[in-house]
Length: 409
Image (cartoon, rainbow, N blue to C red; front, side, top):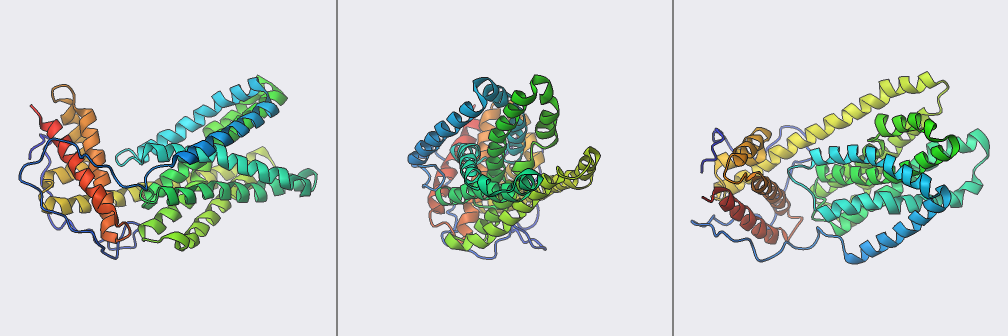
């Protein structure tokens, strides 16, 4: 099948055999992992069945989330007042938008279920904050006064309590969305969203308190510090926990077997959080910025490089899994390259825009469904998802129907 994008068929084996330890590697094959041969003619209708549960948030959790939101909202309004709360809310939207944009770029071609992503953001912004506030109110009387108490609160208590509160949300996502969080990239996405939600609500408090104590003219420095210099901090901390859980999921661990990985990721998140908070206690303003330049900024660059590496590994894995379907006749070799590689996707989107009526939206859906299909097959061959075959049937029907829409006269 020709898409007019100039792509050439790939050569060699589609099998994915990395020569080094990879978080995407799969040592085992499970059932169901066989692929039925593609029919001679695809039917131009969408599947009339739905994917199995494990990628949705139960309604009663939304009820609990809404109730806790009312309590947190009342707390902030009572403590800061309506004006300061509203101002803090508006200012906090800026760093939140920056982080969500970054998450979108990471998760663009295999987007997680929207409701799961909203839940991750909501857990961080609402429940994690509520849990943290409860612990803070319970332990504040035990802390010494003055500098020592402030140091213990910021460098010891805050990293431990906040990262545990956020990490609990990731564990819950693994339970209710066990078929959505199935790899390191997914874990980073959910972890970053939980962290972004927490930072959003925390920023409302910081900006509101600063406005009350120093007026509007005093907001510049704290906004620059939290909104411009460090919008990704909380996202980066909790992404460590998410990465560890995603790696455990990729290895097929379930139940209590994920806890060792969870604690390793949690310790990394706490350590980075404590390092960041501790840097603000160094003597001299210049010392903080020096530490930011030689430690914090390189850590952020390392974080970006790790995500880039994970995306490259995920692309290789996607190409291999779609190659399995190509050998069964569901896709052409050219389509595999188009769906699984960055140049192929860019060329495909350009070609789709040139079609009558601009079919870029259809092409984007085709790419997203195909990438989700590859992830579904990965769950099938690892043996950790006995329901993967049902999802595969749905996704195959969707991709074939979308392809027909693209090629319709």
